[in-house]
Length: 225
Image (tube, rainbow, N blue to C red; front, top):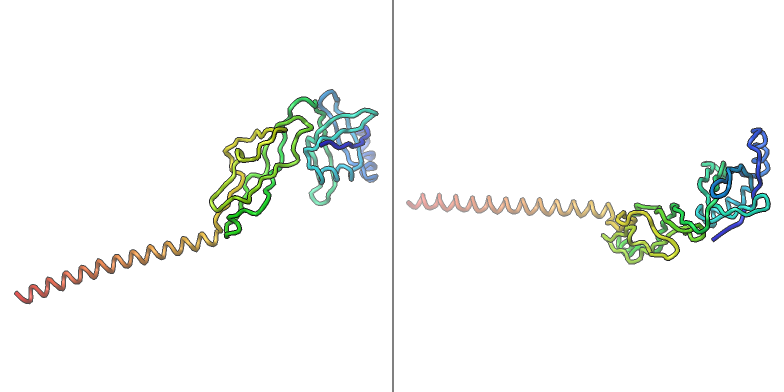
């Protein structure tokens, strides 16, 4: 998947120029990497925001700059935490026939069978590192969890295999698991503890009863003698 983004070279100074560009709806960034010297750029902010929303940050971005095309990936995206605006972005120019490593999201799909029976689906890993050529990087990895019963789990090694990319993250790391509901587990523990206590009391009562019977029998024997 590739998208095209028109960008323009910009001057770094004065600071008032950067303010003016932002006021005009432009976002600021820089591109560097394969056969590209570090170049400050500006571009339509809304266009990149739309691209990231629809395709994620791993999308191949073909920058149209100075009459030429530069294939890039988003290396760093600095967003404002309060508004959906871009503060700054770094594009890294890439060689199309060389593998690169990026992090990609893990998305759980479906309702786990164990969750329908009162269990809780817990996801513990949300991203993995994958390696692929720039045009084959996945936007996300979807994992079907519908067959997971209570007590079942999925590790990185269980992620679906794809010919376009390979997962670099260690395979024994857990991704998700279906566990018993905390409340139900606590109630079961309480019930088990109560049952054990009752059993212990019953054993004690039996022992006491047997001891009392033996003592009474001994006393009766002595009386007869």
